[in-house]
Structures are given as structure tokens and as C-alpha cells.
Amino acid sequence: MTSKALTVPAVALGTWAWGDSGEAGDGYFGSRLSGSGLREVVEKAQSSGFTLWDTAAVYGSGRSETVLAQALTGYDRSAYQLSTKFTPQIAGDGDDPVADMLAQSLDRMRTDHVDLYWIHNPADVARWTPLLIPLLKNGTVRHVGVSNHNMEEIALADRILGEAGFRVEAVQNHYSLLYRSSERAGILEYCREHDVRFFSYMVLEQGALTGRYSPSHPMPEGSSRAAVYNGILPQLQALTDRMGTIGEDRGASAADVATAWAVSKGTTPIIGVTKAGHIDGLVRARGIELADEEVAELEALADAADVDTRGFWEHEM
Ligand SMILES: NC(=O)c1ccc[n+]([C@@H]2O[C@H](COP(=O)([O-])OP(=O)(O)OC[C@H]3O[C@@H](n4cnc5c(N)ncnc54)[C@H](OP(=O)(O)O)[C@@H]3O)[C@@H](O)[C@H]2O)c1
Image (cartoon, rainbow, N blue to C red; front, side, top):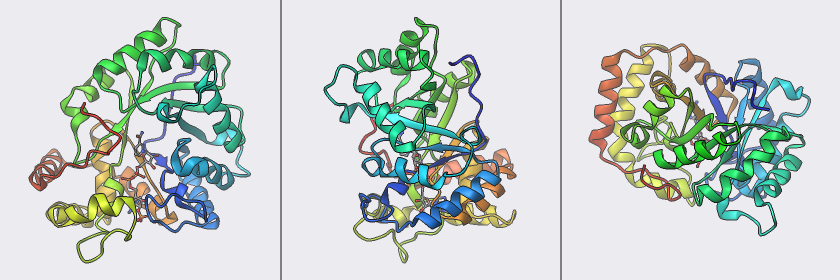
């Protein structure tokens, strides 16, 4: 039940790219991930206090949830939190498509509850939100959040849950140096004022803000992220170079600076970790305090890059 408040680590971990692992991946990221490599990620993350794992039924058509559960094998269920999503666009035609999709996620993740369950996209808020209420009541869902919802949609979902004594406890939107629409739309402020946790996703712009990728070392050929980002990498160079130097002063990387920026804005970044070494970066990021002038400088450089990284699944905030 939701009587216990939602408590989360400073940074959550994303596993969309994990859907690319093994033979069955959908190739979105073009990553080559192995079960043993992901187990290493889990072990390092869990022992570093990063224990909230975000996934979705649609990531790799369920593969991300399956692989995540395998990588978490042996850990007590109370040692980690699972966050997964109902995606209206793939809803079935049964009496209760939300309960059905959740049941499949629970089965893949070999558990009887999720800590945080999201409506992935705002297809029809009035239709889908009420179906969360029985799941909150029977405890299969502990906390509810909405993703990619604009201000009005968040408020409507909150009203619907409020009538049953529950609430929207978290919001999950695209929020990075390059994409700050939730801030401009007042959603960050709303979350602060209403004690709603704002989770920022794609803080690293799928790798484009890590400093790892550049025009001479582009993202994996043939992957969907390459199609989105490779063409704009030249425009990002000044920003990622500056993130690199700000990081260097603290023994950190450009990616760590991006994560620290999202934390400094009062959000909980969901970082799509794919390698154990990324966890070291999150430990460093956790200790970085950016000066106000640094934040302003990075945001100015991001604006000067003049790129639009809105995902194909996102609408205007
Ligand atoms: N609600 C939604 O609609 C929605 C949409 C998108 C994402 N999300 C959630 O947010 C999570 C994060 O988004 P994302 O995975 O798309 O992109 P992201 O976090 O912006 O970037 C992930 C990529 O950055 C690289 N990376 C990760 N950690 C790093 C580190 N510490 N240092 C250097 N490089 C690092 C990896 O690339 P390489 O493997 O190439 O090194 C990884 O694939 C997702 O996994 C998912 O859980 C939600």
C-alpha cells in the first residue's frame, strides 16, 4: 500500500539498453551486452547504494525485464526496488489491460510486486489511470508515477488517484542539458511544491553527452540512436569539451558532470548504465557539487548547440 513514502537513491538505473542483450535484442542501442557483464553492473551498483532499477515491458519486448531479473538473482527482494511501466500503445484487448501487462512484467521479473509502476505515455489519462487503483489496493503496485505527461495530464491523473486516496508520487520525463522542456513548462516546480519526485531520463542523451562519442567515433552503425545523434555530434562538441574540463578538475568525466547537473536541478536521474565502470562514474557524480556559474555556463553552451533531441514518442510539454 502507499502508506509508506517513496524513498529513492540519488540516482536510479535505467535498463532500456539491456533489451539489446543476447540474441533477442531490438538493436535500438546497438550495444553488445552479456549476462555476465550485466551481473557485474548489478553487483557494483547494489554495493554502491544504487538499488532502484527502471525498466519497461516494451524494452526489447520484455527482454530488459527478463535480463534484469536474472542479473539480480540471489539478492533479497527487499535489497532493491523495481520500476516498470504500462505502455498504453501495446495494451491488449482483455477486460483489464493494465493488470494483464503488469502480470506479464511480474512473471518476467519473477516477483509479486513492483515498487514503482508507471503509465508510460499519456494515451488516454481518464481511461488508463483508474485501472491502477485496484493494483495499489492489493499491493502488487506500491507507488505510482506518470511518464511523458504534461502539466494538465499529471494533474488529471493525480485527481483520479486522489478520489481513491492515492496520488501521483513521481513524474518521469526526458530532461537533460539539451532538453529542458519540463523545466520551462513548470513541471519541475510543480513537483518540488507538491512533493512529487521528478525522475529525469536520457540525461546523457543516450551517450551523446558522455564525451565517448564524437564525429570521429560515432555511435554504433545501424542502431536507432546512431540515426538520431550521429548527425548532431559536431554541434555538441563545445558542450561536451567543457563538461570534460569541468569534470577533469574533479577527477571525473563529462558523463559524471551531466549526472551531477541533473541532481543539482533537484531531480533523480535515471542513468542507462551498461558497464560496471559506469557505476564508478555515478559514485563520483554523487560527490560533485557544481557552482551556479558552471550550471549557467553549461546551459548556455547547450542552448547554443541549438539541437532538438525530443524522442519520437514524446509530445510537447
Ligand atoms: N519513460 C520513458 O519514456 C523513457 C524514455 C527513455 C529512457 N527512459 C529510462 O531512462 C533510462 C536512461 O535513458 P537511456 O538509457 O535511453 O539513455 P542515457 O541514460 O541518456 O544514456 C545511456 C547510454 O549512455 C552510456 N552511459 C551510461 N552511463 C554512462 C556513464 N556513467 N559514463 C559514460 N557513458 C555512460 C551508455 O552507452 P554505451 O553503452 O554506448 O557506452 C548507455 O547506453 C532508460 O534506460 C530507461 O530506463 C525512459
